[in-house]
Image (cartoon, rainbow over all chains, first blue to last red; front, side, top):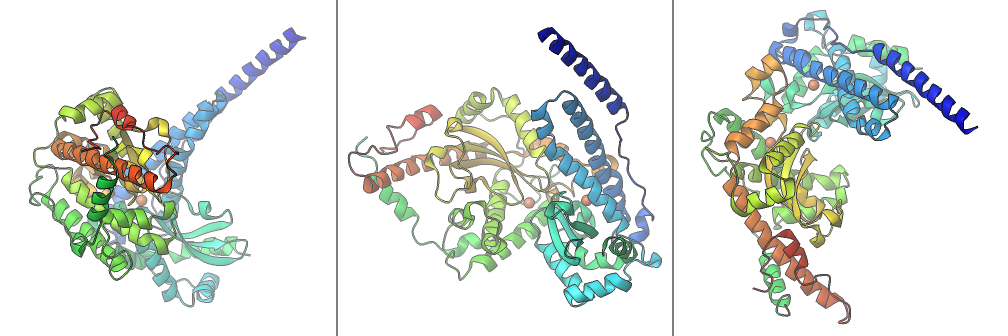
Length: 230
Length: 293
Ligand SMILES: [Fe+2]
Ligand SMILES: [Fe+2]
């Protein structure tokens, strides 16, 4: 009986190892998404230098470290090394969050000649008026919360799918919006890390927030809203 | 031993008496703004001190002047308003602004032209005792500064948490007391809020601290925070300043000890032993406490 149990657990371990190996071969590696516009196309609201650095260097670093952390996670899981699995959570949240957030951010921006800055129409426009009073009131609220955010983070316009209402939220560091509630879908995220504006706006974050509205892609936010709202 | 307590307790109370508002002024670094060139540029100091630090002082004034916190020292405001780590913005704004001012005052003092090198004397002995070697300390400090997710600070501090302050956020394990520790803190947070921590050295790892000086390298290679941290430790850190912070910490610990003894004598019946027991904590720490001076 004991021998049989030992044998079968050995066989099981072999199967688990084989599965883990095939999994690690198939582990998805994330890559830097292309922008739909040139680095300089958002000037003068955001300089080409900032866009290039932000996309090519900062976003790439989150992706590199996210892939690294996922690989380590895979190893830890295959070895059933629970402390290692738990220890990796903060790196996954930070770097995975950085990848998620920046991927949304690039979609949220568009050059003026491609409709950047044009206020939302249709159902999102109506929803903004309903929940915030007016488009201008929403901008004021986002700017105020973004300026008041301590340290590094993001300010969001999100949809609460449960209540079917719009919300303005902030998240710290690279926490994605979903960390503020499982029902929250990001429509618009503004990066208020210093790297997002320092080379151009220095310490004056409110000016960066004031100007970024000139290149916000409301078409993208509207599409997400229409898809996700009931 | 019997002579300590009452006398020093009163001294400390007198020291904490009425204060003027001079501390809410923007304090300049102890060197000209171009003195750290070429390692840290005048432009960085013009923005970091002249704009960021100035804004923090303005915010602090707005939060504090005319309130019950007015007239208190920066340290007192930090501990009083931090509220055990509760991050309710309404209550926390004063603490945030105050910590940012305190941290930057402290940060400027931690650097000097032609800094870097190695500490000496008692500071070096404690570093070797608590980290194994100066090199191990350096590696650990750099790693802490590099891995602080987002904006924040890395610290070398002396932890003597047996003498915890009221209103502290995270009383640490007593097993690890009375030694040098490396810690990191997010955004504005200062180790004073944890109680029993005496900051000796800090590095600001907000992006604004290094972005202007490293922008060319950042454009070429991406994030340069590790380079900034290395340059700070190699060429800017003032070990003299850190040593004198250690002296100040020793004096404060001695004062706290005697105040604690004084309080415990007042609040416990005579047959209950006071918390302080014969300077053992100081001896463990390798610090001279001079409690009964
Ligand atoms: Fe960013
Ligand atoms: Fe700073």
